Length: 256
Image 1 (cartoon, rainbow, N blue to C red):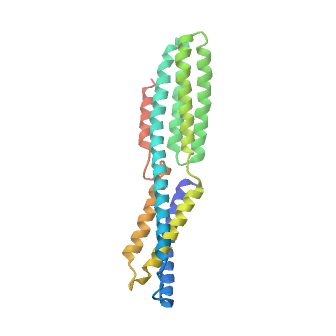
Image 2 (image 1 turned 135 degrees about the horizontal axis):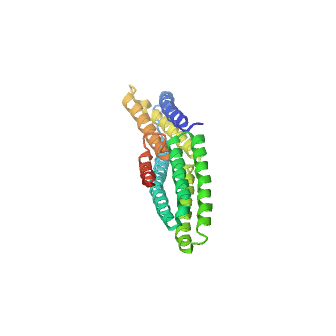
């Protein structure tokens, strides 16, 4: 399923489900109070406290993990820009006749990587561009190895820089696919729905339904889950790392 569609459906379904389950909980609570007015709330506080504490723990861990991965992805963009820029500059150590081809491969490789990031969230198109950039990295490596056979000093300085460039590109590709298992998001949604049911049950004693509390609870919890998902997929929502790609674009502009 497309990531954007998944996020929209998940958040919309969670919001609607919370409103429905609050009403279900309220009616169940009202029925219980009618059958047992004095003991309808006996022993429920501990259960509710445990479930809401679990919800708080899941939100805290999910938010913390998503924020950490978001920051790591931003730092990787800077690391990749530095690695590409350093390797490109060290091409000047090669013989003059070997430089034009390798520099052109560098430009094409970086163009493909930028194109892959621009294609997000179209996963298939992004992967095709990343595959082309990987193939170009292989050509760059082969060309550099051949060009430095008679240049030991250039080999010592250039090949490690190329290796670092390829490594960080691989790390960024892996980071793009690094997300919590789907069951974690399912668990987050299920516990949120359980909290809505218990919240509705706790409000059963009100003579008049409080829309402010019902809607406020659903909206706040749903927005919290949305922010977690937005941090987890920072190229499809409101929280984005696209601005950091400008660093790579600046490196490409410097490749004259």
